Picture (tube, rainbow, N blue to C red):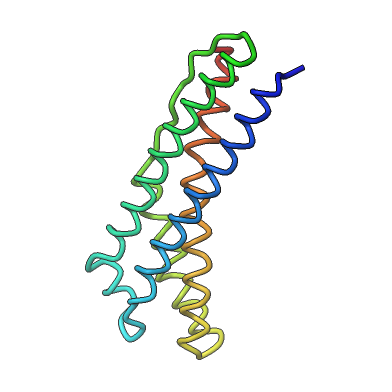
Length: 151
């Protein structure tokens, strides 16, 4: 059975991750709000891609750090030890996926609906969701790697 302190640490950890993903979503929406819907692919490769990738990289790194701290504090509160394994981020895979869910989703939605407003909403929803998923992967992959290694 976990201690009350360990339970409090878990709740605090979840709140920290929620704040982190919320901040990443706001930053991403701000970038996508400026999208040039007349030339979305060109706008993306002219710098929006790197801005969104930076949000992912920063958020992922922060999620890893938050999780490393949480694992150590939780272990101490539970009278255990842990040697966490920090998650890595494959930026090449992120880059490719973000293009597909960004400009790719925009162009697909535009072809289907004929509406740039709808296409922009689709792109925003898919990019923001993926950014949050990559940020949270810092937490998830750190936890899974640590437990799989029995550390």
